[in-house]
Length: 205
Image 1 (cartoon, helix red, strand yellow):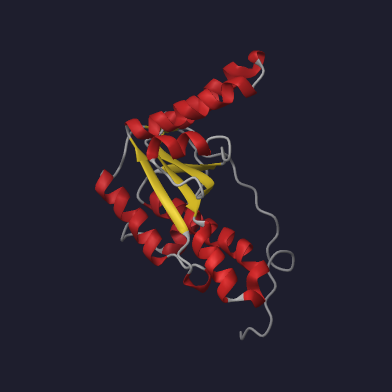
Image 2 (spheres, rainbow, N blue to C red):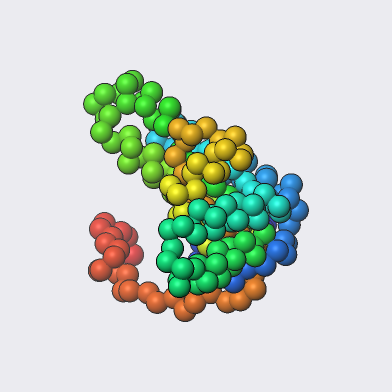
């Protein structure tokens, strides 16, 4: 994260950007370092460390979205496919994609080790993955990228597993698309906070 920006500022400024391009404000090495820091430092339930990240850049990013379009083609009515092409083309126009997976093995090991909580570990695994997605989203946008989160799982799982040698048992949970900002995010509306979405008790003046 940029040293000039506080964490709360970065949280406030995180937005969904759909108009992206292939300009990158930082190097591929720095992008990799952000992913490494997320994997190392984002918490997980019972320290399961079950999240797996696959960072796709340049031609590999393009290939992923070509595969998505290929998989979608027989599923989308012909008269609607041009719209699908345009949408997927928008994701391909970005700089990179982070595939966010959960490895079920450490989760299953926790179920066996702590049977009292066994029914919770699936939910907690999803929480873990979501925190990684969010941390990456905030960190990349703090460096000047725009990003959006997509969910073309499970239809793309098989293709991705074959091409990038990803274990089939890993569960794809989201695709964080990022790139240079080629447009502005939409207007964001906020519901009331105090007394409706936030409740504070016992606070001192």
